[in-house]
Image 1 (cartoon, rainbow, N blue to C red):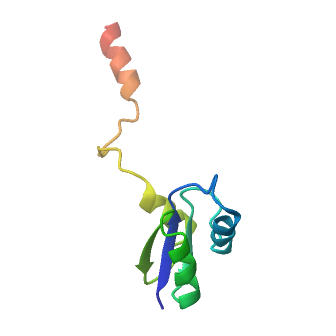
Image 2 (image 1 turned 180 degrees about the vertical axis):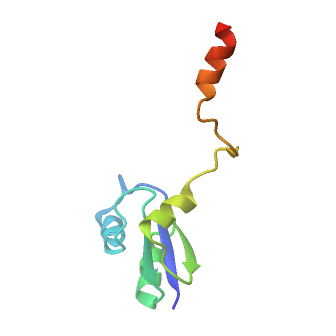
Length: 97
């Protein structure tokens, strides 16, 4: 079974109550929130009505909230390979002597 992964990209502030009610029917209340909907004509019509506000992709399975958050996190640009346990103590000892 496949799902629509719908993410609210733009806010509904200043839009008509009809558009806001469509977003609430899709369970999208905050910007950058993500919901998974079944692929069917009803949900496709709802998404089509707010296509300017959302980004949509189809996925095979739903992700848990923790997995979704990890997938959205950006990389720091570097990888820590090894940490020294007493790194600061060693530096202080070097400068004191």
